[in-house]
Image (cartoon, rainbow, N blue to C red; front, top):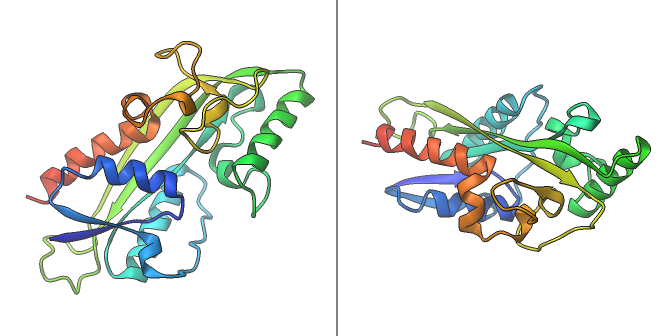
Length: 210
């Protein structure tokens, strides 16, 4: 059975991806199972470039097939920021709390408490190095993308504890009055940017693994 590594140290993403890939005939493992690996240098200019960088880097580090994502939020009132810098919006050692605090501060500077926004996700699968004799196409890469449109609102404070990142401030039309962080994993998967990218990836992997 093919082993696929979820190439992220974000445990929220690991849970979402593990659930999405559960129906495939693969063994899904977390990056943390390989010990303290170095960080990939995400110096791409798009979500897709950064996802590819991470997938290729960790495929080499682990010797296994890897799936990596790069995702973030684009806030219209902030000119699309934080975008590809979403994970480190407040600095290299930022976490969800400090990133959200900066988002609120930046909106406050322009007198806004809400803005149209969208979540974006690029997902890249890179197969294991060529030493795996079972490969049809050594190093094959597959790429999918997803998007979720909504509104960022910070005037009511964070709501919900079921998500991560900017989820406690992100509202979607499908669930009026609720942030993504207030949804169940099943509800979120139906509408989220990562859910859309994962469904497309699962379809491509089903074909590839035949």
